[in-house]
Amino acid sequence: MNSEKAKKYLTGISAVMLVFNMVSPVTAATAPTKTATPTTANVVVTVGTDKSITVKGLSAGDLVKIAAGTTTDTLTASGTSVTFSGTKTDSVLVDRGGSFKVTVDASGDSKTESAALTVKFGTSYSTLFKASSVSGTINCMSGEDDTVGLKSLDNSGKVYIYAAATGGTAIASGSIGSGKTAKLTGEFTKTDKGSAYVSVKYDGMKESEKRLAVKFTSDVTDTPKSSAVTATNNFDGAGVFDATADVLKITGLTAGTKVKVYADAKTTASGLIFSGKVGSGKTVFSGVDSGLLSDELTAVYVTVQANKKKASKALKVSYKATLSNAPKANKIAIFNDEGKSDKVRVTGLTAGTKVVVAKLSGKVYDIIADGSVGSGKTGVTLSTSGLASGGGDLHVAVVESGKFLSKYTKVKYVSEN
Image (cartoon, rainbow, N blue to C red):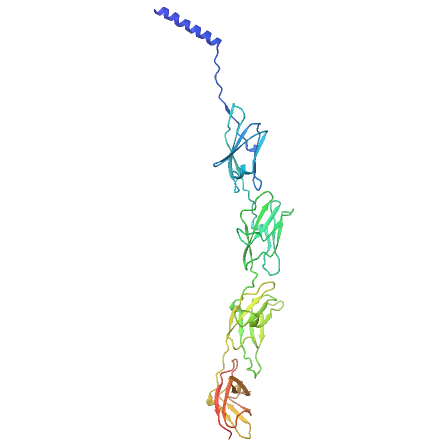
């Protein structure tokens, strides 16, 4: 084919194609569009005891998906909104708060699933109040109710008090009133000291995850310090002379505090030696009694009990019974005279020293004479009618100032002259 013919041929084909295109136009395909992303305003989240997620602004047939981690769930709208609740939200709306994603896929083939909206949500637990909201006193006093007041609370609901920071059942509970206050009343203390723990549960929310510690003082009276106690053990008279009362003094107490003195650490009724009470308006106990501090003991056990509290633990109070120096045998002279009053003379003493003369009957000393050394003197002569005519022995003891009866000195005497 020559060039001229070829040119005419191509021109003819182009003309045919132009006519064909004008008669049979080709329509280009239209790509699907994404569904609009849901707005935050159209997603309503409810946490607490009745959890739910409501997505609004929908059309019937729209497919809504919520997802958190590996958990997903879907609902198809039958109207303008859908609500996820119950088991559909348990794994998404976790109690401590977090976030989830929500997408919408509009009905029809012309739309695809929207981009995901991230929705944050808060905790399902009630918000615990601050320590400044707590008033009142847990005083641990036996037989007297404790009172804890709560103020500046958020909503209606209930408050609870526990013996422990976690676990256990509430000791008491109270409702939040119209003034956003509450009061707990009862004997909250199960231990001597420590804390009680308060929580709150607002309506529609779960009970607060944590509890606020409320410290309280012990219902057991504090044991007095040794430095606050003074025990003075005085001469009991030895059954012959006037006794000087023993004194137990305790400082730092409160008016009305009861004081008990026991013979041993068991502090049972059978061992009770003495009891008394701090006077009105006083802070010092002064127990005065001739039998308060027994000469047979070296210590007593003291408890104190403040008003409406339990008795303290026993404090051991040691004391001394300083014995007088026993008279020397060579300073004792016995005169067993027939037809005359028998005499016992004891020398080498100091003025005011008391002297007792006794016979030993088994293990008991029977005193047959007693007296005191006069002022400015160094000895004393005692008369007695208790000597045996055939001789025997006597036992002599003395009581020096501020001391107790000495050990007895045994002295033999001869038959009557």
